[in-house]
Length: 356
Length: 91
Image 1 (cartoon, rainbow over the protein chains, first blue to last red):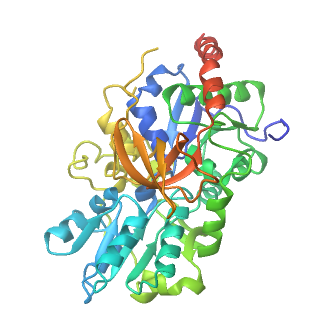
Image 2: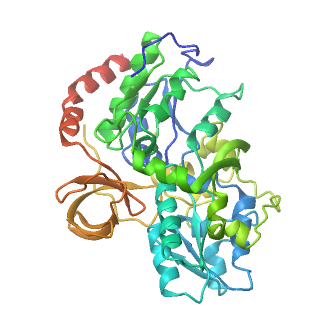
Image 3: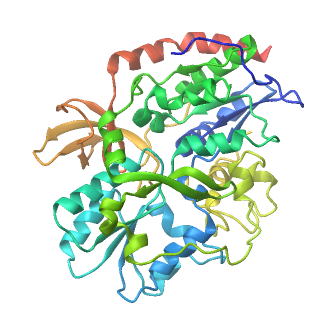
């Protein structure tokens, strides 16, 4: 653990409220499900950051995904479940709808399942939609490796994989950003180790605590953050040492390094961020769906009125969005924050009776 | 303090990581694992020397780390401190 040092941040916001940000969809859900916001002392608020994979995927990339269903080769689109309900820039246009119209969209639990599909159906092109952060990136890398080892010519990955750190740096560089501490994403930290989370405190000057996902672990992490804030400290503490080590999972890190190279990527609400996306390395370009199918990312076609981008930045509470619970509900989501169960809007809606 | 049910549903959504107990290791890097009475095949190639009986965190079909039991107990033991601190903050 690094030495404690004086924080360079204001420990209270202008309105006197202490805002703590979590940057992990599973935290968003656990906090909402357990009513943790209602247990906090007055003057302490928890807000969600860019931690939900489908939420940070911008509409123009979802449009490109939907475009895969129009390819002449009629590919199998293999994806995690929550991706199929995310609309592109046209409301209601989702993979689920495309499937109803005849596209071959299959839900898989693991990237390896998509490789198995390609193995079984050699005459079909199988495109796996690789979304997520450092948690799903190693498994996606392993799938690319497995497909390469088996010599599969019909398996590709459309990588939407993203690195957490650059997005937090981008958020923190906004002068209007007002957060007094971070709950670091526990599962990303499992892969990156404590060393991958040090930037929160050492570079950005925030109190930061790596947290687990049980309610008492989250409360413990919040407690540690409040202690730091009270003492004017900004250090990284690891309250999830049951699984997060100093150096993380080095086998998983090596897998990511072998198959991916960092590239600029577009984030919903945050725009283009340098070195924030995991692109497939040139050596494995045979497995890169963007290259094989010449996928181009365009501009969003229309503005749906969704404020998901502001919610991701912590600039707006889900309930402050004019669409929340009206035009936008989990059954008919306008934006991805209402689609994914880990999205801030879906969590706020589902647990609206227990979340203060 | 009363908390909700801890048994998360089995999910096809990507970001949720859940603990499993390894039952059998197979030569191809896969393993049979159990959670809440449900068995499923997981990939353990990111775990050094995986063994039956190990508890692991599974994310999108891959075990991403072993859970260290001793530390797990320590976390639970720090509970009292937590309650005190929250009470102090509320004053």
